[in-house]
Structures are given as structure tokens and as C-alpha cells.
Image (tube, rainbow over all chains, first blue to last red; front, side):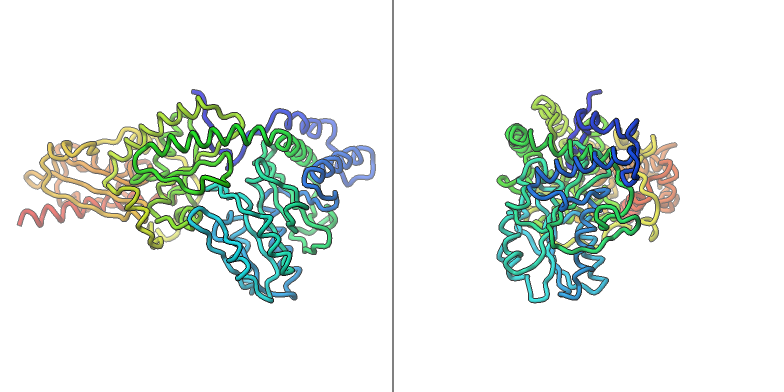
Length: 401
Length: 142
């Protein structure tokens, strides 16, 4: 059975060219970059070359790139690192209601450490209002973190505008750009961000590597202590192969960006338009300023996990915002934050495209999706129209158990 | 049930669960399917907001559940456990109401060969839907 992979927002396939660059560091070039001998120097050079490549693309200096173990770690380092280091300057920090858990759970943790946290609302398409951010900033606000492009519904924020507001008020600004790297402007100077997170596994690179861009002069405290690698900010022997792979992957997505944006935007819009022909279906997220690879829809009266499993059986891999697929049995906080009822969140499906996706694959998938939605609706005792579900905007109750 | 969340993160379904999910038994595909069994009891539990709703129609003769139809809005586990329950109560000439009322979530789970730990609550809804249908039948009989 041929596989159709619609889960590129979860992770991407490692590009062959990336893997090729990485392999020598599993074989002959296995040295510890912190060693003084030639074996170590060889590895050190590879890391510094990778750092140079990354900084060229991000338009920053080499010293501003910190290699970490994942996007999650970079988010944690930025948030805990900045808040804890600068807590004497103020205890108010700001984020949004549609962050990835790698950000939102850090803020929740900091609120237990005595920080005052504001979670900004978003509109029905997932956009943060600049005015809301302006109003939320107080005299004791020290830090803001806003996701660049949302991993579930694809909303791309106007990071430049939001960063500018923070700059004017003297507040540090971090953005999680894990999903944005392939398709958005990641020139940190142009964006005006103080910190930015990227991740290898979303850019056709390896899993288990991320970077944090940290502007010179921005002071953070480490979250890992040890041998003092990465300028004392991130201890632990560097993962040389992954770092080399990350740099290569970033270079490739940067080179192929325009082509991919054109191709995927067209496929995405075709996919969305065809899906919306299925009765009682709703698009989640915006039409414009949406990640070129993100499709997220809700089908009334069916539950996402069931559809996911039926598609899985046909070799079609997608993702859902249904409670049943989450560890905490709560429906997607993002799909509900844009004003959707829990019913719509339970029925939401995300199809995230990647560079290998073809129109033919989308057509095959559409056939199955349409049939399975019909099948599940026949099985369902519910008979709401999508409009009725859109009108229901009640808070998720205590569910399960 | 309170410590479900503490358990593992296994998402794999047993063969039996998959069989009942992909090929559900006694499901009402159309209203005609329901009419044909001449139901004399119907029960519904769950909430769309919580992501699980089950409706069950039963046809009782001489104190036994002879036939049953159901519809479920929910995940794999919810669909498979309703399907399994419908088999349990109608097999071998039908289950006596007194016995059917005693079916627990654990009985359904056992027949399914288990469920992933944080999906166990799905099977609870099945026995509740059945109890509601039996209650409705008894009310109709009066």
C-alpha cells in the first residue's frame, strides 16, 4: 500500500541530502568537539561551520545561535531562562491562548513560581490583535512569547509588528518559529525579535535538534548545567551529526522556499476547497496568512479519532484535535481558542502537507475522506448542521471518566 | 478510574477492537434498520461536547433482548465497545434483562481484550446506554 503522509506539522521526513551530510559524523568523524586533539577539532569545525550557515540565513552573528536538543528545549530555555534571570525587573509575562504546549506549559509553570501571566485572546481565525498586546503590557512586564505560525490551524502572526510593540516598551520578545521556518521570513534583524526557536524535525532535518537565536545582550540563565558548552548557556556534549543536519536542512528549505510556497499554496487551496464541498464542513483558521502546508477542517457529527483510524487503515496519515487523541482527554485548546465549540474541536482534522505531496495523492485522499465521513455520519446519533455547531460556543465541561 | 491518566500512553488497539471498529455489528445504518427490529426500548447517554454519544435500541421478547441496534458518535474505542456490547446482549438467543442490567464496563472491556488505558471510560458509556434502554423498555411496559 502506498502511504500518503499528511502529518508534516508533526514531523517531516529527513531529506536524503541532509542524511548524507550527517552520516560521516556517525562514522569516522565521531570526536567530541570539546576535545583538544584533532578528532575533537574536526568535530568542532563542523559545528562552527553549521553555526555560520544558520547565522547567515537568520541574518545574525554566529555567537547568537545556541544549539539545543529540540524545539521544546529552545522554548523552555528562552522562557525559563529569561524570566528567571530577569525576575528582579518585573514579574509579568505575556503569551497567547494558541501556543504550542512547549510554550504554554512553561508559562503555567512560571505562574506557580510567582510570575503573573497574561494569555492573550485571538480572533476567530487565530490572529493576535496588536492592540491587545499593547494594552496588556504593564510597567512590570518583562517578557512576551508569541507563536509565529500556529501548528494546528496555520495562522501566521504579524511578528514584525508584535516585536516592534515590545521593543518600544522595552520588553523582551520571543517567537516559536518551528512551523514557520519553511515558509516565512526568518530574518531576525528584519523581524526585530530578541529570541527565536527553530527545530530540525519540521524542516526535513533530523529530530532531536533545535536552535535558539538569542540576540546579543539579551541575558538568560541556563536550564542545563554541566560542561559549559554553547557559551555556558547549554551544557552537554554537542550532537554533532544533528547540528550538521540541522544547518543543511535549513539551507535547503531556505533555497527552496519560494518554489515550495507556490506549489503548496496551490495544493492547499485546492484541498481546502474540495473538502468544503463535503456538506457540514468548516475550515479552521484563516484563508490568508495561513501556512501553505496547513489544512484544518471540522466535519459535523463525527469524531476525529475515528476518521484518523479509518484513514490510517488506508495508509493515509493525518492528525486530529479531538480529545480522544490527546493525553489529557481535552479537545484542542487552539481549535477552541478561536471560538469553536468543543463539538467542532472533537471533529477537527489536520492535514499538513509536505514537499513530496502531489495533487494525485490529495485526490486519492479526498475520495477516502468523503466516504469515511459519510460512513461515520451514518453511524452517528447526532444530526447537527455545521451552523448549529458554530452557534454553540460553550465551555468544555468536565468530560470523560 | 481516577488514575487512568497516570497509566501508559499506549495507543494500540487489540485485534478484537479493530474488528468491531472496522466492521461494527448491529449498527443502525438507516432508520429502516431500526424499524425492522421493532424496538420497544431506547436509551441514550453521553454529550456531544464531551465527544461521546451513544444511542441504543433494544427489542425485548419474553424478558430477553432479542435484537439490538445502535449509533455512536465517538472514537474507535467508543464504537468498538458499543458494537461488542450489542453482540454480548443478543448472542445465544438473547440475554435476560436481569443479566443485561448487570453488565459492567469491565465485562465489555474483557470481551474486547482490553483498551488503551486512557480510553477505558469509553466502554463505561456502553453499559450506561444499555441500562437507559432497559429502563425505557420497563417504563413502556407499564
